[in-house]
Length: 428
Image (cartoon, rainbow, N blue to C red; front, side, top):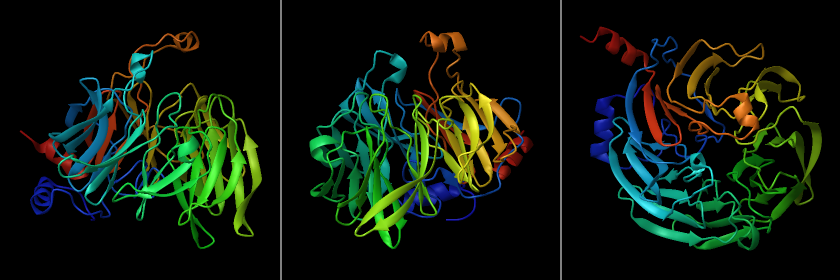
């Protein structure tokens, strides 16, 4: 689907089919249809009013860190209600609740600002897939929220399952961990086991697909290893050691031009590997390794050969080929980022949304607005582990001029369509 969305289009989609088939204007899973966090280039509002971009709607869904998936006129995300983890289906244009489905007991933490589901729903056709934080993965009917199948796992990591379900063709692939398989593929229609790969303990990253030398592979970023499986058979083709702090490997891998980027927090750093065939397996040659790129939670964005990220030390740009830091801004940490063409949206922990051009020359916001209260802790509070305010850690989504973002409890839709701004300016 090309062009901007309109209320008429939303109405037609709802009338023709409550669950539209995937088209170019959908964002069906975490980090989008290409798994890269980059939306296609398009015109959108870059000069924001003083009080920020127009807000189409806001909906409280309860604690959680799920991003949103959007197919047709429906938005899917995860929250908490009445002490249950819940999948919520909203009208993408009005924020009205279409259905909500509790599926597991709530995910709690000593820090109340860390409650809630971590995974993002994945949508494929008339199905919605959701990884619970405790031990179950679910397939729901996208129209009604009814359970189609569920699958129980045994390898829950300390802070709960956080990786989303990867739908790749006829497979639903999970970073299960342990005796369930480091990677576990089930039939996406029935939930029946197809293959397992390895027994490495689970971490928190979503399985990542890529094509190399004519074959399809799935990369699992596990607690202490990088595992790559052949997609069709589940055969292990590469395992690399990658130590972590208490299994906290969260940021997703990035594959580009035959090379695989991995990044971790807590001082473990990042590395770029060049993959090559090694008989019927793969081998990896290290190109560079650095402690200057340290993604504890957020997956970096790759735009025109440069890595942009807000990691555990600050906001930075790093050259993909060499690992050289092009620029660095301290204390802007853990901010989720989204690229729209050559522009970057940064949602800071403080709840401030910033827009800047993706440039190796620096990050110079051309627009900014506080859209959430956010986490306003000082540097001293950070050091002493005093916590104040909700964390804005969830990556936003941009689709047809609309930007969807959330803090710990609330989803908002901002209207960045240029014609939408013109209508607002001319309204009585």
